[in-house]
Length: 317
Image (cartoon, rainbow, N blue to C red; front, side, top):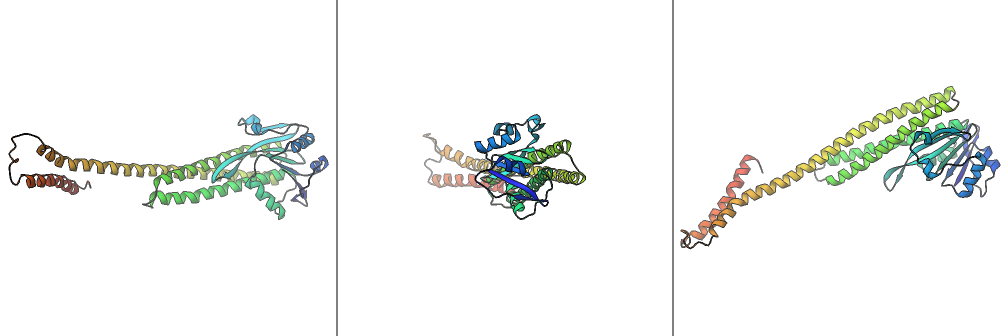
């Protein structure tokens, strides 16, 4: 899907979708957003750029030389964005190609950051005088979305804290599953923040930065520093709750084993008495005793009650 945006009176305006797009239209717009590109759309853009667009496997390369570079087509940045699918956070890579007069973004999936920016643009809320400022707007939107994700993680972590530390009837295995998901999401947010810092640093070195744009870069960097510190706090809290959950599970398991151990000791004397009177010897003093059977039963009961009372007195039960 090909979306085109132009700058009118200092604001980003989306062009209405048309069946066919000419090279002339592409050359005049300020932002070309290519989502899940079809072959003819790729060929059209490649003719405009006079270079090949990055493939999915190229975009996902982790080497810095493959993610941040400059060539004849412009400044290239492959940046990680946070997305959510089936209740779990994931990362998706967006290829930025920044030229003096236009910004080109190539991605394989719909992202909340781009969807929100389009919605704001329709309302006339996205101000930009150049493609460079538009790229900065995208990174500002990205950092805002990461901050919202951290807020959601913090709220869910409060729910997990209640389950682990206060709710006595909680299923601790479910709490561990929730904490594992939160840890994974927090790690992906941190990865996106680190990637954003590298992207901003690379942009500062390779594009013309005026005083206003420089201040925007500084604001984004300060926000990234704050959010990175917050991810560290969340990691510590998640680890604390995970350790606490495992500790409570160990205590529950120890109590179960303790009950089995006490039960075994309590039933050991009655079993011993029953075993003695179950011997098949011909000469046994109590064999012909009229009170032998009640005596044996009483001895079995007494030998079982005595250890129980002793453990109770010691506070082991």
